View (cartoon, helix red, strand yellow):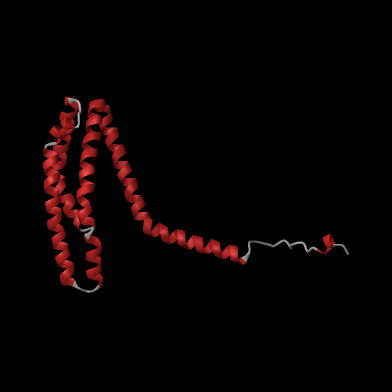
Length: 170
């Protein structure tokens, strides 16, 4: 017999190999676990996007100046919000660690300090919101857009303290 005839041909299999089937089961399990963890985050992000789209739909008919002012005011507000909220995000693992260790006193102490930090972080946010027109003018905006953005930011000011206190509990 020649060498070519001695080669064995692979047998066709009825379905996927056991290893491939197991990999599929593991992948399905991991995707399920990931969706259980990420699902609330995904829903929250989609809610934020939906809220922004709704804002644009509501403000759009008021004209380009109003739309520009709302976008500018929101951008300033969110930029400062993200910057100031970073301090509050650092306390979440500290509260979780003390809670996990069963140290209720330390957990309460950190939570109360977080509330104080949230209240202090709200002060510059409120001041910035009340000075929104001047900030918009310093950024080189048209006076009409700056006026509308300032009024929009004044409307955002009362929500700063509750927002930061809520963030202290995250």
